[in-house]
Length: 73
Image 1 (cartoon, rainbow, N blue to C red):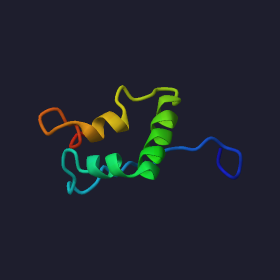
Image 2 (spheres, helix red, strand yellow):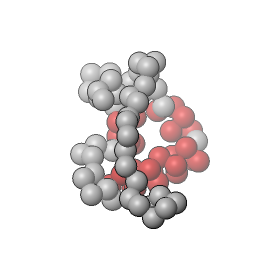
Image 3 (cartoon, rainbow, N blue to C red):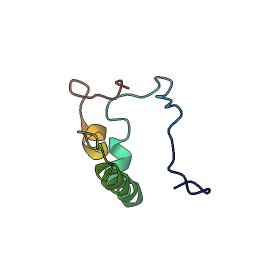
């Protein structure tokens, strides 16, 4: 809920500037427990959405270039 009690509304989504690549965060994910913990929390929250994504942040970050969907909006 917003501060005035109304449900939040998404106005726009910025998909980035194209500076990302497949497996970009895989090393950090493997070496940082705090990074892994944050992403696990985010994955859990995404899974609870009324229309959850069919993908997982953790899985997507570990995909290789041939199967990565990182450049898809």
